[in-house]
Image (cartoon, rainbow, N blue to C red; front, side, top):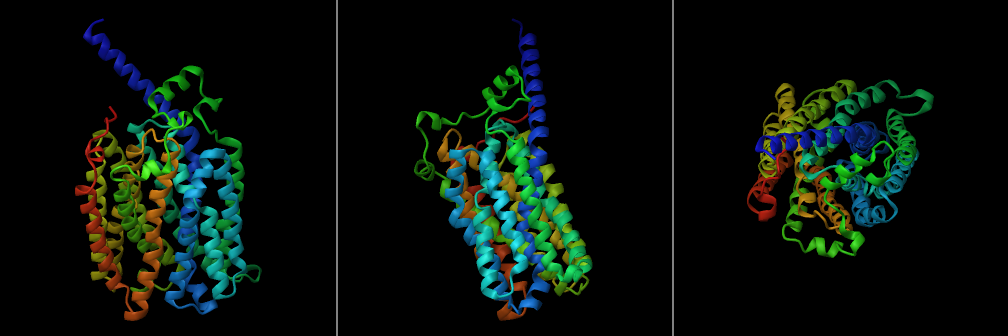
Length: 443
């Protein structure tokens, strides 16, 4: 066979793979993205409910921060067991269970009328949602080849940006226009409308998703063979791979630390952006909602661009570090311009472009480290996410406490800027050789 014929065959194979990946993405990703959109909204809706909720229930900023953090405590405690159960019973059943139970728990927030009820239910919501994000990330490794995961992961996390993009203005409208409807406060409606649709989505997951490539009736035999040949095989069927083995892999705990620090920054944005805008002089809830969408718009744009560039080059580490450094610059500028609304919004745009887009960029790294670890990959991805979510415990309480002590959020913004720079340095200089190597780029 001639060299030209070999090149032609390779090109045809690459085109066939791309077409197949597009087909799988169109089949799976719309539903998964909508589910993830509601999952992320479940985390940020508390930030929009903050003003009315604190007024009605008389909470301090420290109490609010503690309640926000207890969501993460529940999430962290049940994260790894949830993902190990997902591996045993199958992603379809377990993700459906997660969505239905957290949807009901979120809707139950309408019954909260005391500080302790707020703490308890926030913990329960976190426990019910535990395992969703890493479960979906693990699920994607079963359906997409490694060299497409940068853009696929970016597509998934694009839903989080859409959640802020659409959820922020919608939350402002709900708080402003449904307040008093059926004798319910606006923040009651916010939790009700965020929770009940999740029950329906859980039923759709149960009906439409499949656990394995082999079970997909919408793929023919040749498509299944090609897709399976390009995906890292889970080796648990041969008794290989465990969570303990995953933890012992060089670089595993470093990834956990990096994700912890990323989440300190992420929760700083998610829980306090509306407060920053309000403190700068904007009072109207609808306007606050619209302005809060800006960092998520910038994050969505950066996410798509960087996901494609990362896949095209095969480079993961430098993109992740660069985005985190951009987020650090955004936090610094937000502190400097905390009383000037136009410049604050520009700062939040930088912050969102860096922090929001750094998360999917980061998540291209753990599957690369844990490739072929079977159950260890499922539990390992969950544990990295768990270690990261501890940042969601630290960040809201830390910012709330600093605000109560100083009357300003600015010192906390500077502190998060410094931790973000440390994070970027860890990504560049502390990861093992396996993660320093480029992936095979998509042609």
